[in-house]
Length: 367
Image (cartoon, rainbow, N blue to C red; front, side, top):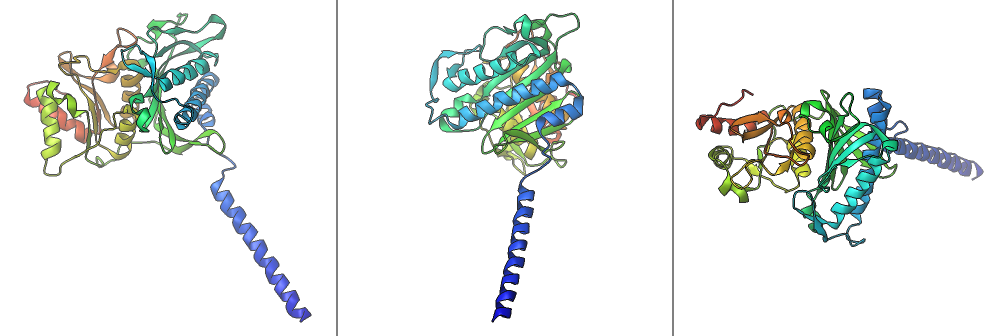
């Protein structure tokens, strides 16, 4: 009996030891002792300490916005703030709060000289004692009209460097996308993802790990599906009565093609563009009779999204704008809240739009 008891005890200890090792191995699978964080990625990619500080400030403000968005109902942050923004849209309470969070983080980062926000009519000039070399334009809460019904919203930003000899002013931002050194967006949904790129580089995605409070590298070298991906078109067809014939014809072809497209439109640019990059398809907000210059803002919507789209292997076009088809990144804003039309997506799908412009006799670029 003593011998049997000894064997049972030995078996129990061996099993317990295996169970503990198995549990530790499983924990090791779930937790990274060497997490590839946003700061580490930026430092390894650029060796620019100021850029690391800037991206940290942007990431911090987006974490704060994440908390506000997730607690919006409990904290009674739904509804209007009773004001309008720079382009005449009604401001939501979360718009104002998100804007304050971003401004405070960027002004106090010590690396910015001028800020432009969708929510502010005038640019924000950083006090001399806190100034740095970067100029940042941002939409703190894109798609906020959806916030009360709990639909995905986001943040968009573009980063420029102060021009040589400049003390930091609006002119540093009134330049084409060729001068933009970094662009990105954050989507607040079931997961919080930050997607950004440096000028001439690849597009990378970082997911917010709430257990450590850091954005962790989860998507390397994001590109459009090589085969074109899913056949999805995304636009507000409620405006179709004001579109030109090429856009109307393209949408009709999307719907009646032998292999028809699926319509998907969230109404939050960040959500629609994020899906378009990952799944394929086309996103359109063209110029029309009511808005001949388009509706989306160039500095903090058009240029940053165009830079991301192109560096992910897609096309970022204006469609027919001011008499010709242009690249969004070639446009030069004449004021901080300048607008532009948008045709963005994979080559296969943008080609459909271009083919309809060709039928109208419009000179179209070769893709």
